[in-house]
Length: 90
Image 1 (spheres, rainbow, N blue to C red):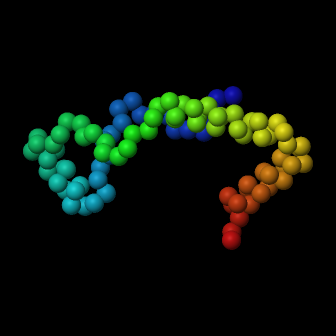
Image 2: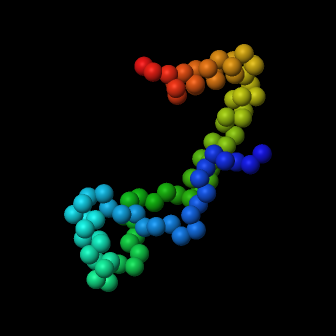
Image 3: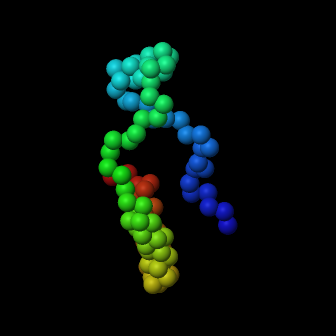
């Protein structure tokens, strides 16, 4: 069964634009005049690739392992609770 839970990656992702209107205007003018940097480096802290891989590895196993331990009645109850949380009105 194909995995349709994620959007496909865009081959050439567009650069992120600033949310502040003044910064956006500045970046547009810089691009039009050719004074913009070719590729701005992210300033936030970078994630450790080893930690990301380890967390993803465990995250992929968790739901299946939990479902395997549950009885069919418990799975139905868990699904009802999840549906109520997602679609129910407070």
